[in-house]
Length: 325
Ligand SMILES: NC(=O)c1ccc[n+]([C@@H]2O[C@H](COP(=O)([O-])OP(=O)(O)OC[C@H]3O[C@@H](n4cnc5c(N)ncnc54)[C@H](OP(=O)(O)O)[C@@H]3O)[C@@H](O)[C@H]2O)c1
Image (cartoon, rainbow, N blue to C red; front, side, top):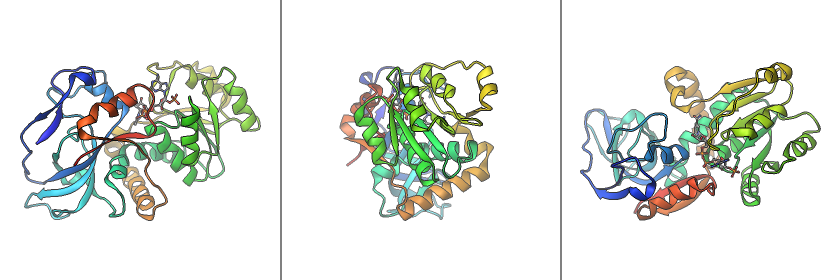
């Protein structure tokens, strides 16, 4: 089968499609013919060896996929060939086939295209876990989403709206702000402007945001915290800017505010009941059509580098998708 193989930690230009063995189906596993795979910020870091954990070389990047069941181990009963599924794994999704333990798969509602399925789980679970389990976002509260048009940002805008919040999207370009409005933001802010906190103050009538969803970091994060409402909750999701900010402890004191960490990788292990509840909520929204996962740019498998480059040049809208076949 064909797969994108990372032989050395490098820029995406140093990575190519190679012919490798199609994986077998060992006990408890299911082999999936991949229809679409997602590329996120973390995948870009992993290819370059810049992520906090390194995948041993050689490896096939991408952790999220959607496709059709191709073969099933004898002891697996929940899946049968030709069923549409989505899955999350540590790596390996930029390939024609992947073999994973059945627990890594979920049934994909038949009306949901592969592109949407592949962009669904990681970001929306992060978004919902942050807003629900960490910030306890309430109906009518003001939610400020930084980097709102990015993969995980837009996956906080939509659940935030569904939870009844008033969503303010902060993004760097007019196109990105319009994109966030398209998916549920009620108001927007250009946070590249020096006076953006004044705009935020005006938009919130001096109240400030009750909850801040922050996948960006840097000075923007510090400025956002300075504007937070009394008893506000600032969700630390990521540092797409490349800079981890350092917050002076007097600010949470003065604001009665809280900094809350969010780590997708630990949710299922540390909070299995919360994980199950939130996944059930997400799949319910997905099946009913209440939540339509945002599909960013879709590129054919042969052009997989475009997905990485679009994201790495800060021009992505939503999550980047690589399509097979
Ligand atoms: N904690 C978790 O479990 C978890 C889960 C998923 C992702 N993350 C993290 O969240 C962050 C965003 O991931 P993503 O997949 O949403 O990435 P993305 O699609 O590339 O979005 C990142 C956004 O950050 C903003 N940004 C500001 N400065 C930037 C810079 N110098 N370079 C690139 N983007 C910049 C951009 O919006 P503007 O141009 O509008 O500023 C961009 O839309 C990453 O740090 C990722 O590791 C964490």
